[in-house]
Every structure is written in structure tokens, then in C-alpha cells.
Length: 401
Image (cartoon, one colour):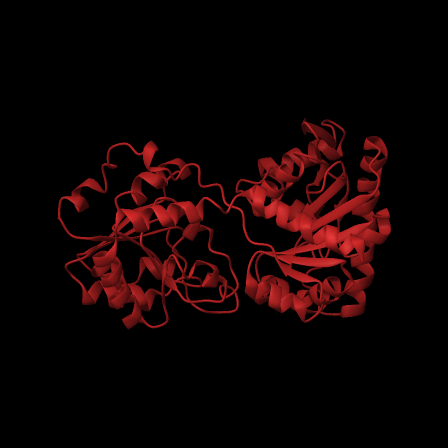
């Protein structure tokens, strides 16, 4: 356990974002025994122009005009920095040498703001924890004189079109120059090891406190009629997005077993909205729900699904929803991936659509209170504390070399 150190966290997620992120949870965990400066990413010119009426951007503008402080003390050992600078929009530049020149300028602008905070807070012996900020923080270690630089990979970002043009080249170079790379899936750790031998799988934290059977109330009104059909409920909770989910598997299952009810909780993209699933009488789309409502839907599933489509984007992802499913003791059938190997003992892993059919049947027939308890205990072992400790262990190993 690293204690009494000064840690600077940079990344792709801002503290004032509308969605959560691994790195925010980890930063709060780091701050339990260390001082943490969380750097909210600076705004680039294109974003400033395109989203100038967004309240979040307006908040940044106020801080840049000194109407709000740039450095904010949020709690014991925890500060947030809103850099008072604007970066150039360069991610899609096709010319490498021009990108590199402008990227170094952007890095210097961000680092200048961070150095001001370092001076004010008197940070020393600094650890940088970089959550996939491959462009803006490429030169950060040398620009602020940090001791250790840890690069955190939690998604295969360079498989996404936005990052491909420069990310393939730049992320590989950043991994190679980092002191260590830590990953939340075994697949991503293997990818990183191609560029840096000090690349490690450190697991994944997950706050499953909401997913507790003791907190469950009566069934939601929109699932009650489905329960009244007296059919097994096979369910999925999350964004219904064709890039990540295999619609063909779901259509096959719904056609094959009209005696099962298939329930989907979450927003749909256009491909799902126009899919054959909407024509099936045993398929029910319940729409988006608040986070605190989700356990009350999951509780009434007989089997939970995660039918991931295998592609460059999904293959290495750690599926946090699996921890949520298992925390409620639910039998879970998911696509077999390298990242899912850590769940192999507690889930049913499918390769084909026929596998899905067979494994759902098996999950329905062999479920038991004992199996449910085992799943719950396993899921609740994936805490943010354990995740942070594993990261700290690897940093300590590198600093001793």
C-alpha cells in the first residue's frame, strides 16, 4: 500500500462529467492515504466552439475568466484542477510531424497549469496516473519532473475511429516510454506488453453496493405484467448498441424459445429499434432507467445476459455489468472473451448462438441458493480498494528497480 505520496491523475474523464468512470473511483481510493490532484482535461478550440452553450463548457469558461477558482479543494487529500488554457484541436490531423509539433505545444500548455497547482500544493515525489490520455499527457512526466509514470488502459481505444488516425502510433510510443502500464483486462495487458514489458493486469473495481437483495422492493410496474406470464425471464441491462451487442444471437434466442420472456432495460440505438426483436411477442423493451432502479429489475430476471459482439472494441473490455449481475446472485450467460476468463468459474461462456441456447437452459435448471451465494461473494471481492492496492503494488515494484 502506497501512503503519503503525491499523485497527479490525468485522463479522458472530467470530474464534472455526466457519467462516471473507473479513474474517478480510483482517484478517490488513492486519496484515502495520499494527496491527489485530479486534472480535468483542458478544452480544445473545436469543442469550445461546438459546445459553447453546454453548461459544462460554460463552467470551464467561467474558470478561465477567473470567475471561479481553477484549483478546488474537494475533500481530505483531494483537489481538482480546471486548467485555464485552450488546446488546439489536432486529433484528426493526418500529418505526423505537424501533429507532433502541435501536440507538444498542447502538452506544454496543460503542464504549465499543472505546475502552478504543484507549486501551490507543494507536491513532491510525484506519481502520475494517466487514464488513457495518450495525446495531452504524452510529455507530462518530463514537463513536471515526476518520479513515476503509470499509464492505465481500460479500453482498446485505438479500435475506435476517432483515435485511429494518430492513436495507433502515439499510444504505442507512450506505453513504451511509461514506467509501467496497468490494465483492467488480461487482453489489454497482453496488448500493452508488446510495447512495454512492465505491463500488468490489475483487475477491476466495481461498486456493487446498490445491487443487494436486501434493498429490493416490490416489482416495478412495467415488469410485473411480464412476471404474470409465468415464463422464465431472460434479461439484459445496459445500452443496446449494435457495435457492442450481437443482435443475431438475441433474435435467434427469441425465435427459438417463445416460452421464455426476453427483457431489455436500457436505451436503444437505431439498429436495435429496427431489429426483428421488436416483432417478437416474447420480447420486451423497458427503456432507460435510473441507476438506483436497475437492481429492482435485475432481481426478477431468472438468467442475465451479456451477448457481446466480438470485435476490436469489445474483445478486451472488462464488463462491469457482470459484477453487478453476480452481486445479485444471478446465473449469467455471456460471450466468451479473453477478458471474461476471470469470470469463467462463475458464469456460462458461449461462443455460438446455439451455445447461448444450451447454456441458458442449463443455467435455469441447475441454479441453487449455494451457487447464488458463491456468485455474490466473488463479485463483492472486486472492490476499488483491492484494485487500487494492485496498482500500488505494481508501482512499488517498478520504483524498486
